[in-house]
Length: 256
Image 1 (spheres, rainbow, N blue to C red):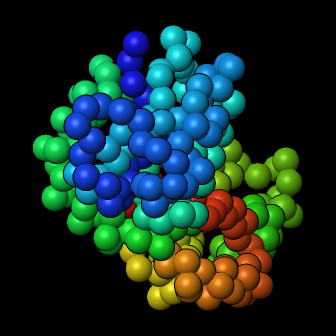
Image 2: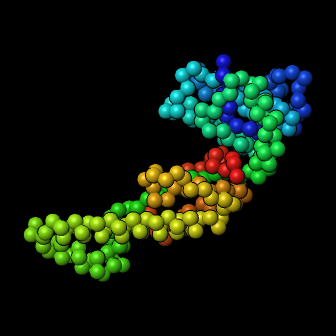
Image 3: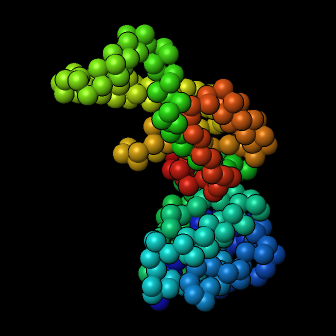
């Protein structure tokens, strides 16, 4: 049976003489070993160690699918529990190895890199911020700030059905281009307003449909400041719809 990998954590324990589950309370992540993982029924999480590193793993269910909300939540819950106890390098949902021995081999091969990232991410969490426009509010702002465009809209409304098709098409294209430019400037504004309270920022993949799709690395000790900056941004930019998720394991910052 394949081994499912949740994440990598520090382990102060030396290698055991043979592959075995670590005893509770000795790994620095007391309470993780044996907790419920993915699968139905939930598969128990176990800890495999190699030197100063440990991996949180379980058996992999045969029916693992990325759309299964139950397993996605179970994966995240294991990482949240581990993160509450110390530094954790989260693996993406669906990370598999052929067996526990293969996991140990990877821990040994990349030990220096994993140790460095664990130190860098100690007491750090991720917040995901997505921003989109309230269409009615942003259109009102654009017309208030652009008298020429407002005059074109007013003229089009007066013309009503008598307005020409090409004239209406040009107006629609002008409005759409202005909104796209505003989306770009608003995305920059969101990033600048929040990154001062964070340690790193990563942009999400293009084509998500969100003008701003950003992940921020935040130290637990300064999270209050970050959330205050979110509140100020919401109050100041009422035309933006801000969706915030976190604190999360630092998925976007595992690799430099």
